[in-house]
Image 1: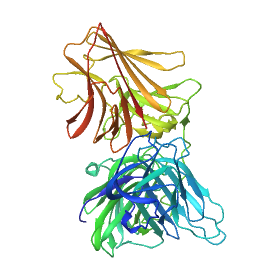
Image 2: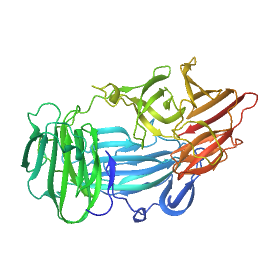
Image 3: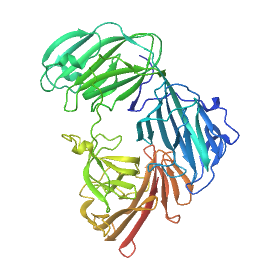
Image 4: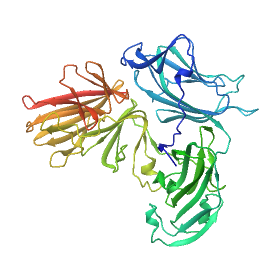
Length: 544
C-alpha cells in the first residue's frame, strides 16, 4: 500500500470533474470566487476557473453518462432564484424547493444516485440528498422517451456551481482473493486488534470469502478475526466499503483504514486506499454486539459498482431500522439528551434541543452556555435514544446543520489575545435552570461571579436570534462574547460575516465593537462586553 488513505462515512468519494472540460452556454461564465450576500439578486464574481456561474437562459450540461451513475456538486443561488436539475430520463428536481435548502449566497451540497432504465424496467432515483439529508430514496421515475444529458438550469436568478463529482457505475470485478482466508473465532467481544491476546479461542479455520456464518451456533457475544491476501491486478485508488451490524474495523497491509466502531447495518463506512498491483494483506475484526448482526466488505474503483468480497448470506438484506422521528408541537418541543459533536471524543451530557414549527431548531450545552448547533428542516432523529436499548443515547438533527461556536458564549479574558477556553468549570459558571415564555420558548439562566445572565434563542423569520442579557455585579476583568469561530471568516458587509467558506452567516449591529482574531489556527469573531448601570445586552443572529 502507498500514499494517503481517505475515509468517508456512508458517502462515496467521487472522481472530480474538471470544469474546464465543460463547454458552457453563453449565459454561463467561469469564475474563481463569489462575492455578495443573501439579499443580492445577482452574483458578483472574481476571476478564476474553479466555479461556473449561470443566469436565466440555457442549461449547463454536467454529464452525458448514459448508464448508472452518481453525481455530487456544491451550489449557491441569489435571493429568489429557482434552480432545476434535469436527469437523463427528463425528470426534473427543483433544488431550491425544500425545507433544508440554505439561505441564498451559502454553499450547499446535492448528491444523487441514478439507475438507468432497461427494457421495461423504468429508471430509478436510487437516492437524492441535499446537505446530507435524504429527500428521496428508491423512487421509480416516469418512463423516458430518450436519454438526455444531466443539466443544471437557472430558471430565474443566478446559480454558482463547484466541486462537481461524477462516478459511472459498471459491473466489473476489480480484485479477488488470492487464496483461502484464515480466521479465528473468539468467545468474547473484542474491540481492538491488540485485545485478542489472552481471549478464549473457539476455532481456527479457513474460508474462501469473508463470512459472518462461521460463527453459526455461537451463543452471546463473540469475535471473528480474518486474515487474507487480496489480489489487485492494476495500481490505483480502491474504495473499500465495510458493512456491519456490530463492532468492527479494517486493516490493509497493517494500516488501519476503517476505525473500530459500532455500527448498524445500512450505515457503511468507506475508505479510499491507493494500492500497487499485486497482493495485499487484508485483516478484518468483527465483534458481535447488540445491533442486528451481519458482515460485508466491498471494493470498487472509479467507474465500477461495489464488488462483494463476502460470501452470500454474510450480509443480510438491509431492513431499515424504524426511525424514531420527532416533530415540534404547536409550542416548541424541548428534549434533554446526549449529543456527539463532530471532532469531539466525549459526548455532551447536559444538552437540550429545542424544536420549532418554524423549521429552525437548535441545541445548547446547558452546563457551558454553549450553542452547539443550529439546523433547519425537520426536527430530530431520536432513534439512538429510544430504539431498542438506545445505547448511544444520542439525539441527531434531522435537517441542514451548522455548528456555530460550541464553547461558552461569555468569558473573562486577561487580554484580547488570550485563547478562548474549551470549557469552564462550575466555579466560574453556574447553570440555574430555565423558564418558559408564553409561547413555550425557553429562557436559560446562569450566574458568573455575581453576574446574572439570561440566554434566549428565538427563531425570527429566516434566522435564529440570540440575546444574552446581563445584570447584577459586573465581573472582575474584561468580559468578551464569542459570536462565531471557524477556519475562515469573510466580511460580506458591515455587521455581516460568512463563516467556514459560506457555510452560514453571522449578523450583528454594524456599530458593535466586533473584531476578528486568529487563535489556534482558526478565526474568531469576538466582542468586548461592558456593563453600564448594572446591565448589558448582546444580540446577534445566525442565518443559514
